[in-house]
Each structure stands twice: as structure tokens, then as C-alpha cells.
Length: 169
Image 1 (tube, rainbow, N blue to C red):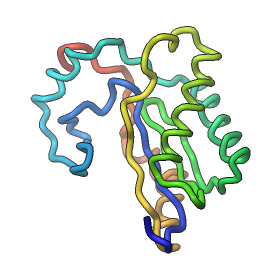
Image 2 (image 1 turned 90 degrees about the vertical axis):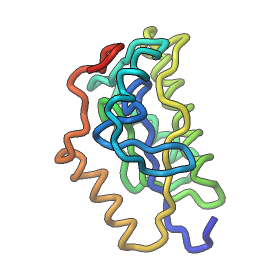
Image 3 (image 1 turned 30 degrees about the vertical axis):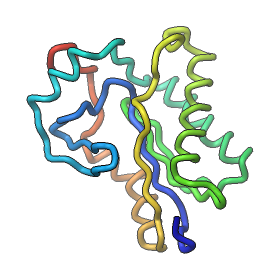
């Protein structure tokens, strides 16, 4: 953990989206970005234990509100956040915490809120395991992450109009 860290850029995905091999890009735990391998997607989709449940507008609002509430409660400085249909981005300053601690606490509290308001999320995963976090160590990186979360996501085309079906898209 760097003493110069300004903030974390955190991302996690909805269960069953961004499967390994995804042509939009995917990250392998402890190995970073991986080249697209579209033949892997149907294989992983066929092995999902639950259907993919994307976040509709009301659930996105719940997640966004919980991120704001939890960061205020923790005393973390929330710089940007955006719950999308199939993933969540957060840029947050959280002194004294690791990126994985911040990510896991935010995910857990968002899960709790979704389960309290939507019976369909009971007894099933809401998110994929883990997620990504990066240290933002300078003002330029922080500003770029804020811009990406606040504006650029709408231009990336990473929303799924429909969940992938088992056995392929």
C-alpha cells in the first residue's frame, strides 16, 4: 500500500456478466487484463448456477444510495460512483483501509440493501466474486477516474441489453 495513495478506483460486476473470455475485455484474478477468448463465454455461461439478474433503474438507485450512505457513515470521501445494469464503479478516498476492504464492505452493504428490497436476490449471489480495485496515486489519475465514472461510461457500450443465456449469447 503506497503512502501516496489518494483514492481507490473500484469495480465489481453483477453475477454472470463479464464472464471469463468476454470480448469486451475481462480480468483474471492476480493476472490483470486478458485477451478476449470468446469460445470461453458459452462454456462459463452454461455453468452458471443462477440466472443473470441485471440491475434495473430502481435497483441501481438503491445501490447508488447505499454507496453514498455507507461512505458517509464510514467517513470516506466519495468522489464518484455509478451503478450500471451489469457493474458498479466507485472512486473513494478511504484512509487506513485497503482497496479490497473498501470493495468488500461496499459490495456487502449493497447486497444487504438489494436483498432487503428484492426477494429475487435472496439465497443467490448478486455479484461476481471479488472485483477490481486500483490505487490512484496522483491527481491526474484521480481526475481521469472521476471523469470515466461520471461521463465516459455512457460512451463505452458495456451495458448488456439482455443477460447472456446459458450456452452462449
